[in-house]
Image 1: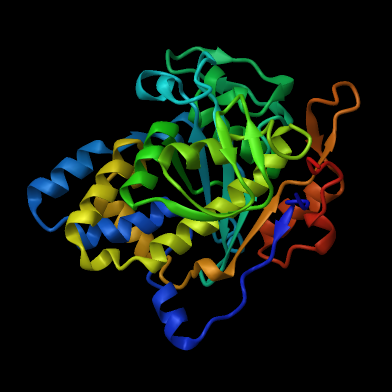
Image 2 (image 1 turned 90 degrees about the horizontal axis):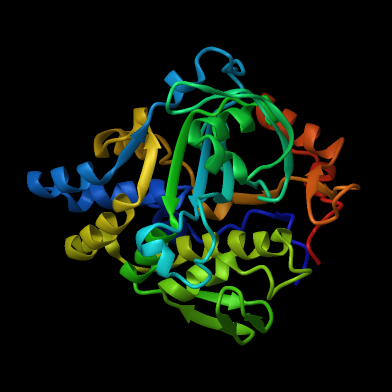
Length: 355
């Protein structure tokens, strides 16, 4: 597999295709909000979908000890895919791991003007400094060094993940979204599967995934195994699968784009119901109305202009199974996000890449 540190924006399309693409939005969860608005016309449908969404009061949990909101920072959204193994998640292949972790983390940056976007993947095995955080019972979790990034979610919760990202980047996170694995599986099945170009034969006994190289249409279970596989690709680390996750996100957006979902309220509702059942957002977005307003504000963003980057990391010298932010690349990347400037090519290159 080729190194998956940065995928440039896709090439420009014909005017008709671009107009069609603008009906979509940057993140799948935000994109689905438009579908909700089109399909949820009856009050009882709206009420049912609205009740599915769970909210987290990030602002209350974090208080005022946060990076300043600069005019140049645009909108920054932290998207987590959680791997809680409770309930339905526990029946998914590889579900013999206790607790819950943030298996996938993306910082979606939309500059002022909202005509393009950048998705930055944070490897789950990255060693970070976890700041002091408030726990749900009112007590405090002390700060700690060299904590694996994906453990912050299970140890303290989503607000502490936001705080950790803000401390490491000095970028103000405006909104938070989380979808769990069971919801991801149901979402893919609801749209009828996603076609991906598998880069190489994959045989991963841990996730249960067995695929031949080439274009294949994956159902919900296969898609979940595809974005979770690590032993069947690259060097077996988390870094190898980040490229698959970035690829799948773009393929998923393309699949929705090919389907005329806005003309099918029944299918729209099925997709929306599947998505919202497993959706958690910050309290400011925890309603269909708020989500729809946020999605409409992103109307200028086209998936064809999205750039995907992996946070530059290097193998940790004390533990080669872990990685740390590579310098000066990481600092250059976050500075570009804060200031709304172009990301230097050097900030997109990661010394550790997963094979």
